[in-house]
Amino acid sequence: MVVKQILRIAVVVALAGFTASAQTATPSRTRGHVQTLASEKLEGRMAGSPGERLAAEYIARELTRLGAKPLPGLKDLFHPFEFTAGTKDDGSTISVANGGSAPVAFSRTDHVQALSFSDNAEVTGPVVFAGYGLVVPETQKFGYDSYVGLDVKDKIVLVLRYFPEDADLETRAILARYSDLRYKAMAARQRGAKAILVLSGPRSPNAGATIPMTFDTALAGSGIVAASISGDAGRAIFAGAADKSLEETQKSMDTGNPHATGFAIPNVTVTVKAAVQRETQTGRNVVAYLPATSPTSGVEKPWVALGAHYDHLGRGRNGNSLAGKEEAGRIHYGADDNASGTAAVLAIAETLSKQPRRRNVVVGFWSAEEIGLIGSNAFVNKPPVPSDQLAAYLNFDMVGRMVDNKLTVQATGSSPVWNRIIEQANVAAGFELVLQPDPYQPTDVASFNGAGVPSLSFFTSTHTDYHRPGDTADKINYEDLDRIVDFAVAIVKRIGDTPEAPQFTKVQQQTDTAGRAGVRVFTGTIPDYATNVKGLLLGGVIGGGPAEAAGLLKGDVIVEIAGQSIANIYDYTYALELLKVGVPVKIVYMRGSERRETTLTPGARK
Ligand SMILES: [Zn+2]
Image: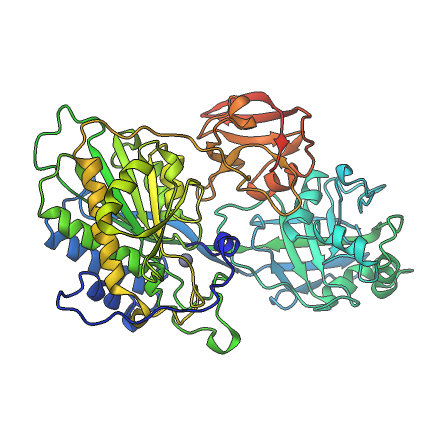
């Protein structure tokens, strides 16, 4: 599961009150798979890593043993896709020319370092100091704009990192929300600046230090050159403003007084080259199918799909680990998340492979789930089997820690048939079921629901080892995991053997996926985070929401909203701050190569 949202679902399960499963006469059908996938050798199966490749090969071997076949159009059981695995500085430089004297050049990353979202380019120009570079949208009725009275067009903007140090708590709380580096960069770009330089001021935390590159899965730059610079480089620029010291200037800004403004720095010309190396890696889904055992003519939507993500966090270095200090850097075994689901799907496939099937059964093992559902999105975006041929999709993510016979089934709102089918299958299984209609879950089921496929996701709830090195194979409750396998087989058979396909219901989403804390408006858009485009690509629109009413469709790319240009998801999120409930705004979007306009009226978030 993806970390952000699961924390909302349940912060901590008070006690890890499972009991180790007793040895029984029947050997477990899942234990061997979990032990292999969650072994030391696979090193936590991080997408794109050698451990991920070994896991994929193991899964493919198991599928081949069951007689599963490559999907139409694929030569083998692997479905590769590209993603950004990280960024690093690739030799950014800055040189400061003050009047007639020789330029001072800086090149090491402790003096100049590109921000992870920077464009790769070299620019030269005069410098304007714009204070903290903060712009609070008018809608906040707060009145703070670092750019008031400054002309930054075609200039290089120098701003301080963070927000005014001495301001009262309330002011800081408001300004902090707009102090994100991406937001500052967007504000500079929208005012025509060529580049933005960020300096941690002498009165701030990390004074004079450049900003380490963060993990950023965006595939493209944000439309402006952006770099952090050292105190030395900052002072070299400030030398052009003879009457003002950096320290005194920061102090005058630090009260939060909105009238303390920036100024152009005369006599100085700066050349900055930002170089970001985005490391593109290849991840691999493992996909296959068990062909129907009888002719599929007369069967509506002759495919049914099962899936689980098999990637995990490696050693947890990408910011999504919840490891404590003493565990940091250790292998995150991911036995429950999600060797358990992977083992379940393999075991379900094994059972189904020995039985008659009226539908073809797709089995999908997704990678790069942990960094944003990237593998399953890649699959539904270019599906080897068209989504409208899939009768249903069943997802398994964290199904190995059942406590007190309790099983959560999510996304039940995606078809009217689910409650009845689940109830019937549970007569034999006898679980304490928790049914959750919401399909907008932080796991791959969201990708399939977004593609209009009736979906379910199985989950045995979170625990204290979630996203930590302690999620190990010895803690899995194999007996109950095997019961989930039988339960799922019963459900697949009910779908598989009925000539009619389940009807899809579009569930209204309660909150925008793009919403940040404090965003009050609801637009009904579902951003696609995984694809490399300039603008905001829509992975879908929420049924009954404002975007649907505006005529927007999956695949449209929003490039402007309320007069703000949109280069990426972050711009879009910030643009939402400007919108008011019930007040229509103009949206410019690309449909294919055609530029179109529409009007969207935001609703209120619940
Ligand atoms: Zn996870």
